Length: 215
Image (cartoon, rainbow, N blue to C red; front, side, top):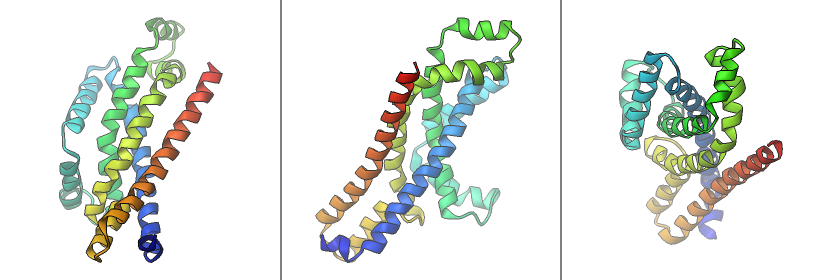
């Protein structure tokens, strides 16, 4: 307990840092993932090719390599002076968006084709059909896999600690450098991650129940 009480401000900052980068990168991943899923089922070939290329590239690029690209290549070429928090959130969000895309696309495929055909028969555009008819029905099947994806994102956020971001795993390294016993340090880090992941799991479980009632 002393390792936590004696270093609580640093632990608090690491916990808040993990929550912050998880929340921001989750939002990025969700927005990008839904958009790219729309591209993948689009009737426009260039959009489908872009969506396929995005998923293939992001899913097959190691996350650490993606962090290296965002921290050492992107600032030099595109956006100099961006904060480590923004760069880390973008790297995590872009990487996770490919998994969100595939989960959403799988949900879209569960919606009967007749639903989209009926929408088009009354003059709705592809975007309107996707937004008003397909996605609301697909959401029910997408919620459970999204929970697992965002829990995995939370654990992946530990990589951000190696790139000047305050987060829980960075606190573990700080405590190790100070000479604290590694076992209680890892226990407190694990508890911090469990609090976050249980919260995410609980929120998605609540959302699932609400969707079941709506059904």
